[in-house]
Image (cartoon, rainbow, N blue to C red; front, side, top):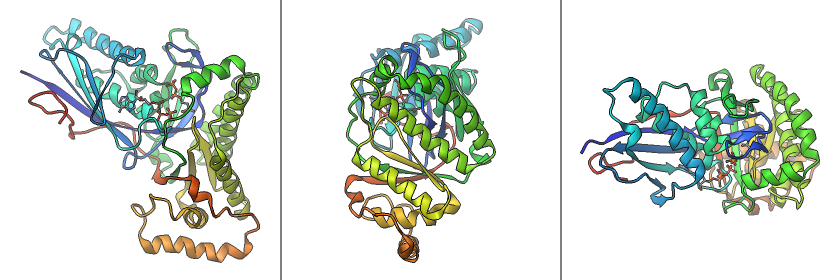
Length: 396
Ligand SMILES: Nc1ncnc2c1ncn2[C@@H]1O[C@H](COP(=O)(O)OP(=O)(O)OP(=O)(O)O)[C@@H](O)[C@H]1O
Ligand SMILES: C[C@@](O)(CCOP(=O)(O)OP(=O)(O)O)CC(=O)O
């Protein structure tokens, strides 16, 4: 039996200008444009292998070694779009094998917890779409493919590019102009680092889709956000990124996270994604910026309590003097830094100690499970690493 296989990796992205609200829930068309930073696949990535063969008898998906349903409408929509693009090619070139008619085996692994508010659906759908597009040898651009990934999960469309990415909301009812486009490549601003403080890796309470719809239907604040606040910030943030203006980028990022969570609180009944630990982190970040008299670190929170901190490489030691000293008991430092490097963060803290006027919460670490230290990264990468057995078409 002849089996055709392709594999790709795809990254996680964390929005700095949040997507929250759909104008069309079927097509995942947003009520506002958004911006994100793609994170390095050295630390967070999905690897997906796809295979097709005339001999397969049903579409099957395995995530992290477990068979998962492919029945969701979102996944079906992605498969349908990809098959119809392949079919167009087959109609024009009769010599091509009829992949569009054959079943698919999809095998995927996330190297981070699934459904923990770590954007697993974004990396997952981006990898699925790019891997199948590669198998089918589709000529479409990443922006074109991002429209298919968008139907899987809105934020997934931004994971088709590395660096700094915008999702332009578009105006058309069929979503043909709602796609991801690059704002700047990772090489244009490579100094951006990210620290994820994993506050909780349990499954979140209100799924994003449900939360968004409640906000759209019940929050008055939301109208101001989508009509005035976000359109202005969308332009300002793109400019800040292109000018490598960290202060502006960081302030917009923090304000937008707060604005999004304010619309959640303004929903009825209210939605709370941040917990007490999240709030303590917000206060700590403002205190650190005040201590240094400049904005050197920003926080942002998605639909869950985990914090993502953005900062520039040059300021890392200053920031970690505080963060490492407070969170040294938490897992995740040792795989990035040597013992002498970690000690240097603590030594720096000792230098600062007498000048600190704010309250340091020595119990903060208790609410945090681990830290993931990463940076801006590249888009999906084709790979020879393969999760499918070439002779059977089953997961290895
Ligand atoms: N590797 C993958 N391949 C295909 N689909 C995946 C993959 N990983 C996750 N998913 C899909 O994404 C779902 C998890 O999405 P969910 O939105 O609940 O969590 P999240 O993406 O971690 O959170 P958020 O999007 O709010 O940051 C899974 O149930 C699965 O359907
Ligand atoms: C808060 C967010 O992370 C919401 C992401 O929502 P999803 O992309 O997970 O929602 P669906 O389109 O329903 O799959 C903000 C963002 O990533 O822009």
